[in-house]
Image (tube, rainbow, N blue to C red; front, side, top):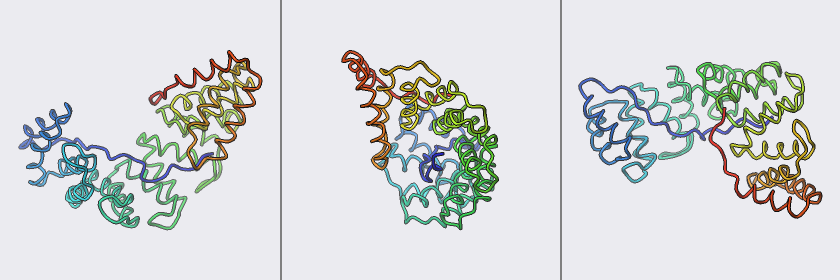
Length: 313
């Protein structure tokens, strides 16, 4: 099973809650401007509301400064607005402030402070904050590592439909971290995340079907889930799709398709994945030795034309 995804990869999410009735008109006008990409006008309409203490709008201004929407990107200014919202107990402001501490954006990195603000938001039921708390307990960032606590917070987020939390619950059940190893339970959580289009969960479902972990071995199902993840650009899934085509497992043997997927995997493995990339290249070259010049040209053309798909449930 692959490792838990790293903290800090979550994007800052624009919070668009309901504004107070007194400020409804400028808020709605600002929202309309924002949606049409007129960020400068949105900022002009929303800033007075933020100055008056509207925590939702304060958080939104923080997002705009963090993303450079209508203003030069300014993490310090983003932090200032997030803090004003967070100090009012607004969960989205607390969560985004925690992210800034975790990533060291706009202020010195401080995992302990990140933990404090994630917890405040998580205690209000903020699913992304609950997920982030689970990650920090799992990694021992800002707190002593505690798999049981990681499981608890992942489950809270997962029960709200948070796909990354569902995926990480699957990983912990598969590895027996904070809980007795249970492949059947891991399968259930991977499937829930995979059904939301999570590529890592789709890949792990493929692995479990291929190995018969928590389910009867089924190469056809393994291939189906590998392909969903591969279509989104997951290099490990692309490599496994190549193997399945090369060996005729769950699909008819097809060297053209095998070469294409090995080629794509070799190109997409990160710089840190030297060994994986080399394996993809070796397998691609072994397949190439069995192909005609026409087949090789076709495979290379297919690889050049490939584009990643959006999330595919």
